[in-house]
Length: 226
Image (cartoon, rainbow, N blue to C red; front, side, top):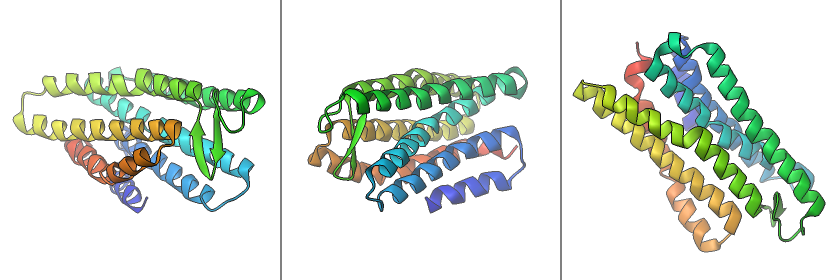
Protein backbone atom coordinates (compact mmCIF):
# COMPACT_ATOMS: atom_id res chain seq x y z
CA UNK A 1 0.00 0.00 0.00
CA UNK A 2 2.83 2.41 0.83
CA UNK A 3 4.37 1.69 -2.57
CA UNK A 4 1.09 2.55 -4.31
CA UNK A 5 0.86 5.77 -2.27
CA UNK A 6 4.34 6.73 -3.39
CA UNK A 7 3.58 6.11 -7.06
CA UNK A 8 0.28 8.00 -6.88
CA UNK A 9 2.04 10.90 -5.16
CA UNK A 10 4.80 11.03 -7.77
CA UNK A 11 2.25 11.06 -10.58
CA UNK A 12 0.03 13.75 -9.03
CA UNK A 13 3.08 15.82 -8.08
CA UNK A 14 3.63 16.43 -11.76
CA UNK A 15 1.53 18.68 -13.95
CA UNK A 16 -2.16 18.14 -13.09
CA UNK A 17 -3.14 17.04 -16.56
CA UNK A 18 -5.89 14.59 -17.36
CA UNK A 19 -3.63 11.65 -18.14
CA UNK A 20 -1.78 11.96 -14.82
CA UNK A 21 -4.99 12.06 -12.81
CA UNK A 22 -6.51 9.05 -14.56
CA UNK A 23 -3.34 6.99 -14.20
CA UNK A 24 -3.08 7.84 -10.49
CA UNK A 25 -6.64 6.60 -9.96
CA UNK A 26 -5.48 3.06 -10.80
CA UNK A 27 -3.10 3.17 -7.82
CA UNK A 28 -5.62 4.95 -5.59
CA UNK A 29 -8.19 2.24 -6.34
CA UNK A 30 -5.67 -0.41 -5.26
CA UNK A 31 -4.84 1.62 -2.13
CA UNK A 32 -8.51 1.66 -1.10
CA UNK A 33 -8.87 -2.08 -1.71
CA UNK A 34 -5.76 -2.75 0.39
CA UNK A 35 -7.11 -0.66 3.27
CA UNK A 36 -10.53 -2.35 3.31
CA UNK A 37 -8.84 -5.76 3.05
CA UNK A 38 -6.64 -5.05 6.08
CA UNK A 39 -9.56 -3.68 8.10
CA UNK A 40 -11.90 -6.65 7.58
CA UNK A 41 -9.07 -9.06 8.39
CA UNK A 42 -9.21 -7.72 11.97
CA UNK A 43 -13.00 -7.90 12.36
CA UNK A 44 -15.08 -10.88 13.45
CA UNK A 45 -18.60 -9.67 12.65
CA UNK A 46 -19.63 -11.56 9.51
CA UNK A 47 -21.89 -8.81 8.15
CA UNK A 48 -19.16 -6.16 8.42
CA UNK A 49 -16.59 -8.53 6.95
CA UNK A 50 -18.89 -9.31 4.01
CA UNK A 51 -19.48 -5.60 3.38
CA UNK A 52 -15.79 -4.68 3.49
CA UNK A 53 -14.88 -7.66 1.34
CA UNK A 54 -17.42 -6.43 -1.21
CA UNK A 55 -15.66 -3.04 -1.30
CA UNK A 56 -12.28 -4.75 -1.58
CA UNK A 57 -13.49 -6.76 -4.56
CA UNK A 58 -15.08 -3.71 -6.16
CA UNK A 59 -11.98 -1.51 -6.05
CA UNK A 60 -9.69 -4.34 -7.18
CA UNK A 61 -11.93 -4.96 -10.19
CA UNK A 62 -12.61 -1.25 -10.79
CA UNK A 63 -8.92 -0.25 -10.96
CA UNK A 64 -8.10 -1.66 -14.43
CA UNK A 65 -10.64 0.60 -16.13
CA UNK A 66 -8.31 3.55 -15.48
CA UNK A 67 -5.48 1.76 -17.29
CA UNK A 68 -7.79 1.30 -20.26
CA UNK A 69 -8.72 5.00 -20.21
CA UNK A 70 -5.02 5.89 -20.20
CA UNK A 71 -4.58 3.71 -23.28
CA UNK A 72 -7.50 5.38 -25.03
CA UNK A 73 -6.11 8.84 -24.28
CA UNK A 74 -2.66 7.94 -25.62
CA UNK A 75 -4.10 6.17 -28.65
CA UNK A 76 -6.72 8.74 -29.63
CA UNK A 77 -5.50 11.95 -27.88
CA UNK A 78 -7.39 13.95 -25.25
CA UNK A 79 -9.35 15.78 -27.94
CA UNK A 80 -10.77 12.74 -29.75
CA UNK A 81 -11.31 10.69 -26.60
CA UNK A 82 -13.41 13.27 -24.79
CA UNK A 83 -14.03 13.59 -21.07
CA UNK A 84 -17.67 12.75 -21.74
CA UNK A 85 -16.77 9.43 -23.39
CA UNK A 86 -14.27 8.73 -20.63
CA UNK A 87 -16.75 9.32 -17.81
CA UNK A 88 -19.50 7.40 -19.57
CA UNK A 89 -17.27 4.32 -19.90
CA UNK A 90 -16.06 4.54 -16.29
CA UNK A 91 -19.64 4.95 -15.03
CA UNK A 92 -20.97 2.04 -17.10
CA UNK A 93 -18.14 -0.26 -16.03
CA UNK A 94 -18.49 0.77 -12.38
CA UNK A 95 -22.25 0.11 -12.42
CA UNK A 96 -21.83 -3.31 -14.02
CA UNK A 97 -19.27 -4.29 -11.40
CA UNK A 98 -20.97 -2.77 -8.35
CA UNK A 99 -24.62 -3.61 -8.94
CA UNK A 100 -23.92 -6.94 -10.63
CA UNK A 101 -21.86 -8.19 -7.68
CA UNK A 102 -24.33 -6.74 -5.19
CA UNK A 103 -27.29 -8.46 -6.83
CA UNK A 104 -25.54 -11.85 -6.92
CA UNK A 105 -24.49 -11.54 -3.28
CA UNK A 106 -28.03 -10.64 -2.16
CA UNK A 107 -29.50 -13.49 -4.20
CA UNK A 108 -26.85 -15.82 -2.82
CA UNK A 109 -27.68 -14.86 0.76
CA UNK A 110 -31.32 -15.66 0.04
CA UNK A 111 -30.99 -18.96 -1.81
CA UNK A 112 -27.54 -20.49 -1.34
CA UNK A 113 -26.41 -23.07 1.16
CA UNK A 114 -24.30 -21.04 3.67
CA UNK A 115 -21.46 -23.57 3.38
CA UNK A 116 -21.60 -23.94 -0.40
CA UNK A 117 -22.27 -20.63 -2.20
CA UNK A 118 -23.24 -20.82 -5.85
CA UNK A 119 -24.73 -17.47 -6.84
CA UNK A 120 -22.79 -15.03 -4.66
CA UNK A 121 -20.10 -15.38 -2.01
CA UNK A 122 -19.67 -16.26 1.64
CA UNK A 123 -17.09 -15.46 4.30
CA UNK A 124 -16.00 -18.88 5.56
CA UNK A 125 -13.29 -19.09 8.19
CA UNK A 126 -12.55 -15.40 7.70
CA UNK A 127 -11.87 -15.90 3.98
CA UNK A 128 -14.05 -15.12 0.97
CA UNK A 129 -15.56 -18.10 -0.84
CA UNK A 130 -16.92 -17.22 -4.28
CA UNK A 131 -19.80 -19.02 -5.90
CA UNK A 132 -19.43 -20.24 -9.48
CA UNK A 133 -21.94 -17.75 -10.91
CA UNK A 134 -20.26 -14.87 -9.06
CA UNK A 135 -16.86 -15.96 -10.41
CA UNK A 136 -18.12 -16.27 -14.00
CA UNK A 137 -19.79 -12.85 -13.82
CA UNK A 138 -16.75 -11.05 -12.45
CA UNK A 139 -14.36 -12.70 -14.91
CA UNK A 140 -16.70 -11.98 -17.84
CA UNK A 141 -17.06 -8.28 -16.98
CA UNK A 142 -13.41 -7.59 -16.29
CA UNK A 143 -12.30 -9.59 -19.33
CA UNK A 144 -14.74 -8.09 -21.81
CA UNK A 145 -14.72 -4.49 -20.60
CA UNK A 146 -11.16 -4.07 -19.30
CA UNK A 147 -8.52 -6.71 -19.98
CA UNK A 148 -9.22 -7.53 -23.63
CA UNK A 149 -9.51 -3.81 -24.57
CA UNK A 150 -6.31 -3.10 -22.58
CA UNK A 151 -4.41 -5.74 -24.54
CA UNK A 152 -5.88 -4.62 -27.87
CA UNK A 153 -5.17 -0.91 -27.36
CA UNK A 154 -1.71 -1.64 -25.92
CA UNK A 155 -0.75 -3.55 -29.05
CA UNK A 156 -2.12 -0.79 -31.30
CA UNK A 157 -0.07 1.80 -29.46
CA UNK A 158 3.06 -0.36 -29.57
CA UNK A 159 2.88 -0.87 -33.33
CA UNK A 160 2.08 2.80 -33.93
CA UNK A 161 5.45 3.85 -32.50
CA UNK A 162 8.39 4.20 -34.87
CA UNK A 163 10.87 5.29 -32.22
CA UNK A 164 12.64 2.23 -30.75
CA UNK A 165 13.04 3.85 -27.34
CA UNK A 166 9.30 4.45 -27.09
CA UNK A 167 8.58 0.90 -28.26
CA UNK A 168 10.87 -0.44 -25.55
CA UNK A 169 9.24 1.64 -22.83
CA UNK A 170 5.76 0.69 -23.99
CA UNK A 171 6.76 -2.97 -24.00
CA UNK A 172 7.66 -2.61 -20.31
CA UNK A 173 4.20 -1.19 -19.69
CA UNK A 174 2.54 -4.00 -21.64
CA UNK A 175 4.46 -6.70 -19.74
CA UNK A 176 3.51 -5.03 -16.45
CA UNK A 177 -0.15 -4.97 -17.51
CA UNK A 178 -0.12 -8.67 -18.39
CA UNK A 179 1.57 -9.54 -15.10
CA UNK A 180 -1.09 -7.63 -13.18
CA UNK A 181 -3.85 -9.30 -15.20
CA UNK A 182 -2.52 -12.76 -14.40
CA UNK A 183 -2.41 -11.90 -10.69
CA UNK A 184 -6.04 -10.79 -10.63
CA UNK A 185 -7.17 -13.97 -12.37
CA UNK A 186 -5.23 -16.00 -9.81
CA UNK A 187 -6.93 -14.09 -6.98
CA UNK A 188 -10.36 -14.71 -8.47
CA UNK A 189 -9.65 -18.41 -8.97
CA UNK A 190 -8.34 -18.74 -5.43
CA UNK A 191 -11.56 -17.18 -4.11
CA UNK A 192 -13.48 -19.83 -6.06
CA UNK A 193 -11.51 -22.98 -5.24
CA UNK A 194 -10.11 -22.10 -1.79
CA UNK A 195 -7.34 -24.69 -2.14
CA UNK A 196 -4.35 -24.41 0.23
CA UNK A 197 -1.82 -25.30 -2.47
CA UNK A 198 -3.33 -22.79 -4.87
CA UNK A 199 -3.32 -20.19 -2.09
CA UNK A 200 0.42 -20.80 -1.60
CA UNK A 201 1.08 -20.33 -5.33
CA UNK A 202 -0.93 -17.09 -5.22
CA UNK A 203 1.03 -15.81 -2.22
CA UNK A 204 4.33 -16.39 -3.99
CA UNK A 205 3.18 -14.80 -7.24
CA UNK A 206 1.58 -11.83 -5.43
CA UNK A 207 5.04 -10.62 -4.44
CA UNK A 208 5.67 -9.88 -8.12
CA UNK A 209 2.85 -7.31 -8.19
CA UNK A 210 5.33 -4.62 -7.16
CA UNK A 211 7.38 -5.48 -10.24
CA UNK A 212 4.40 -5.35 -12.59
CA UNK A 213 3.14 -1.95 -11.41
CA UNK A 214 6.69 -0.59 -11.48
CA UNK A 215 7.00 -1.63 -15.12
CA UNK A 216 3.67 0.02 -15.88
CA UNK A 217 4.75 3.24 -14.19
CA UNK A 218 8.12 3.30 -15.91
CA UNK A 219 6.66 2.29 -19.25
CA UNK A 220 4.39 5.31 -19.67
CA UNK A 221 6.55 7.74 -17.72
CA UNK A 222 7.65 9.25 -21.04
CA UNK A 223 4.06 10.30 -21.70
CA UNK A 224 3.31 11.61 -18.24
CA UNK A 225 6.34 13.88 -18.33
CA UNK A 226 5.06 15.81 -21.31
